[in-house]
Image (tube, helix red, strand yellow):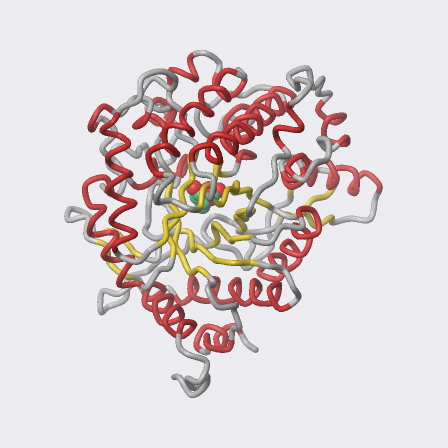
Amino acid sequence: MKNADLATNTAQWKFPPGFVWGAATSAYQIEGAISADGRGRSIWDVFCRVEGAIADGSSGADACRHYELWRDDVATMKWLGLDGYRFSVAWPRIVPDGDGAINAAGLDFYDRLVDGLLEAGIEPYLTLYHWDLPSSLEDAGGWLNRRTADAFGRYAAAVADRLGDRVTHWMTLNEPYVSANLGYVTGQHAPGQRLSQADGFDAAHHLLVAHGLGVTAIRDAAPDASVGIALNFTPVTQVGPGADDAHVGAVIDAIHNRWFIEPLAGSPYPEIACRAAQWSGDVVLPDDMDLIRAPLDFLGINYYTRQLVDHTGVLAAPGPTTTMGWEIRPSTLTELLAWVHGCMGLDAYYITENGAAMPDVVSEGGVIQDHDRIEYLATHIDAVAGAVASGVPVRGYFVWSFVDNFEWSLGYEQKFGIFAIESDTYRRIPKLSALWYRNMISDSQAPESAPTTGRP
Ligand code: FCB
């Protein structure tokens, strides 16, 4: 079927009953209110003030003002027909100093949000760490310091104690690959450090220790919780026939795609990556790998694109691409899901992020006619349907993102939302993709007997 037909004939997809249609955001990208109700400082508050760190000189200080407008956002999600909403809790709101006293007002905010979601019939999918580390922990070494992992365990316990009676689905970390490598190796993200790949692996190991401690804390507080982690994958396609092309491809693949999933599945860190980085692994203590392999209920998969690699490294993507310069490649998602299932053998996977930044030209009628985003979403959902048909138990799909938001070091220039934000009023304006997603969800929930063809 052609892509345009996929987008208009959504009822063809056969997803199992109970499949979760959702949308995703994260705290620093949407909340704003960085000084409200006792919130401590995060590494992103600090990083955004560094000259040149953020493309448009902006920050998440106001972001989408979700902290203030969350009730309206929940109502909008209900209008969309979402089954699930993935959001993150801001660690600096809960433990302003990173480790130590709990700030009740911070917990109260998420308590209200969770109740509001449940009242609207929307299942909360909660991520504990989506990159906003309390800056006092960074002052003591951040993820290079193992004590940050211990502090994370205590923070996870505080959140799970408070919300574990109502939140079923928990993710410890979002994309630890990005926290470790963009935070401590390339310096593109907070805390902006440019260290060696070996240092990056130290940070990555401590993130996985934090994950393990978090899993234990959540299960202690909420024995019926469903616990996972959200990993990002950028599958590697090797270009060029040489042994050197293959070697560089294998190293990049090990760092980007294998480093986190393999220890979660009970294997050691990929040898080829350790060797390439001359990583001593001194930070790995005797019981760490057992802690890290604690059984999970699900894995969250964030997928946007693949990467082409030859002996020189990652190549510029061929077209078609999104405004991020990321190649649009839905078939890779089907292959990725089969590979991930082969590694983990779990009963449940969720696509915890998938979406596209697009130019979003406003048409004469004032509506953002984002047919390109609709096509991206339709072809990727079709790719997920393909994986489900071949036996991969994918249980849900969360579009990134609910609303245009603070896209980290790219500021507000890259727009991933299915809703735009009106400047001045902060009103959420549905793009055509929001209307499309809403129809698709209601079609997929229609009883089997409903006609599946004949829609315009
Ligand atoms: C992912 C992040 C998310 C957003 C999207 C575009 O890597 O988890 O916060 O930035 O990319």
